[in-house]
Length: 247
Image (cartoon, rainbow, N blue to C red; front, side, top):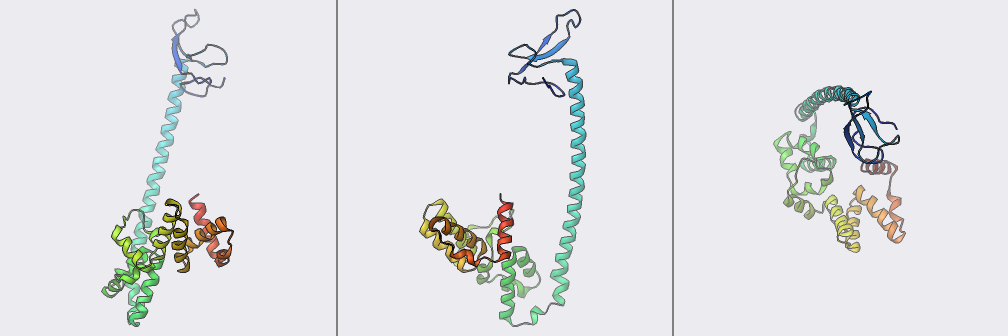
């Protein structure tokens, strides 16, 4: 049988190996590994000294591989630190230098507010970058109505969003929170009618993720394909990437 290299800890039959001493004249006192259940040509047998020599080579090779992997990880981390430093520098440049050339502060306040709302729809990072640029942008970003435009499902993983903040978003009819409520009602509480009603509210606000779930669910339950017509080619590509990334 193929024993592989190193110490044979189990036989192919599943039994653990045992260490015994040879009592033959040729190998008197030499220790060996043998199947702990059955002795025979189809079961494990290996001299202990040979097994230990092989095990040493196996362990040494594993250690060398691990050391190389560790060196590669350290190199990757160093590259990541450099990338992060470059990103931080770029953000600082955008937040400070480009504001001198970007005429947003010269626009009417309602246009400024509209820009802040659209930035909030992009990501938290973009909004907080804009928020840090000046006091006026901070005041506009802190308005309650901006809560309507966040996508709470794209909040960075390390940021624990307070429950009260989620309630504020929901009170502002934030589409991502309506979608979350609908999914919870439909799939967790088995309240199908209420869940679909919440999801439809998010769909009517143009929330793409809700549109996908709502379209697939209504198709499965009622055979209704109405909402498939609302998908653009770009949204189908984005949804496909998202579904594949989440397996």
